[in-house]
Every structure is written in C-alpha cells, then in structure tokens.
Image 1 (cartoon, rainbow, N blue to C red):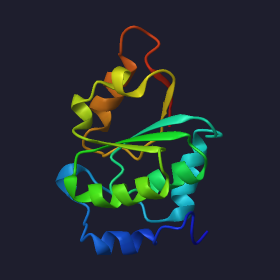
Image 2 (image 1 turned 45 degrees about the horizontal axis):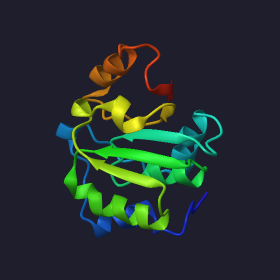
Image 3 (image 1 turned 60 degrees about the horizontal axis):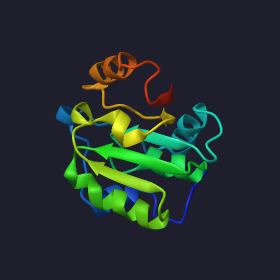
Image 4 (image 1 turned 180 degrees about the vertical axis):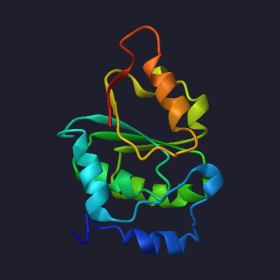
Length: 149
C-alpha cells in the first residue's frame, strides 16, 4: 500500500514540519501505512463510527481511520508541534476530524466523545496505564465508549 489518500507521504509531512518523536511525551510515530491500516481495521468496520484517538502525532493512524471510513475522528494531541500536520488532514477530510489540543489525562471523555465511541489508538506509552484505568473505571457503567482497540 503506497498511498491511502491524496495527502503527501507521512515521512514528507514529518520532514516539512520538522517533527521528531519526543521520548518524554511517549511518542512513537507510525510510518508504515500497512500497519496503520491494520490497526484501523482491528476495531471492525468503521463506516458511520465515531473514533477517539489519543496521541495522533503527525496523523498516520488518523489518516488510516478516516480512509477506512470512520464518520468522525476526535484526535487528542498534547504536542502543539504536530497540530499543523493534523490540520492538513482535517482539510483533506472536511467535517470528519476534530482536533483537541490538550492533555489526554485531563480530558472529560464522556462530554467530548458522546455515546457510543470506539477508542482506537497507538497510546503514548507513558500515559497508557492511567488512561486505560480511567476509562475502565468510569461511572456510571457502561462508560461512553463502545470498544477499546
């Protein structure tokens, strides 16, 4: 798979914006389009589905989620350096990508995501445990999410 959409290859996007993954943010940019497409498909068919993605970085998985048919992707990103790259994706998929600039540990997920939402993400490793624990202990049960992938 060489291209999933009309946007430039992710390596070019990263170079254009001078991005480098920061260890202190738990970043790991996914560049392999086959891998991002496979991760997007793990959540099942995405047609008409709302997806929450934490830590999209420059948007490799984000692009795959949208290309696989997600009706809406809500991307929460703490690193302001990646926001211009995400804005390019939002322009390419009008009305389907909402970018939330903020700390994923401080987001009010039930208000942001609404019911039902699938979480499909390559979680930043330094916050994965507190995020998962928070999502799984949300009251009232069941929480806003439909599935975690």
